[in-house]
Length: 128
Image (cartoon, rainbow, N blue to C red; front, top):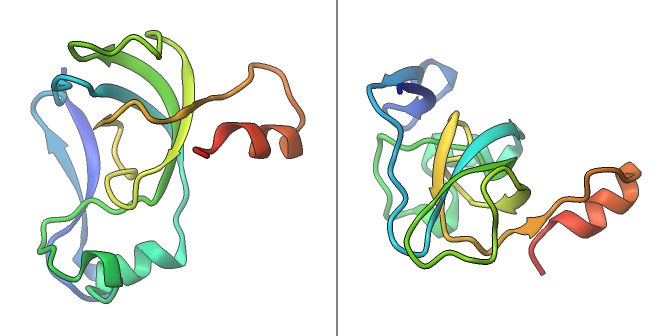
């Protein structure tokens, strides 16, 4: 199964962004989950990443997939993951990688309640 992701091909303005078709979804390693991303923000931090001036990532080099935070569902679990179930909705801060349809992450995210107000969901979804 293929998937798409946004890629910063070089540091610079919006013209360095490309949508990349990847031939196969990433496989979660031990202790990771593969997330089917449902939503990701486009924030000022992503602009700083694209320009190459975001301090925590100054040693990173393109290609980079931006996307600081995501919400999605667990699509697959790697070996040893027991705290999250396939299909479970989670949210997390990832710094990079959120602008992709599929993403492998450590399972340190919080479960999102199925029914909640926006304010309550905001308080309950993010990692502590």
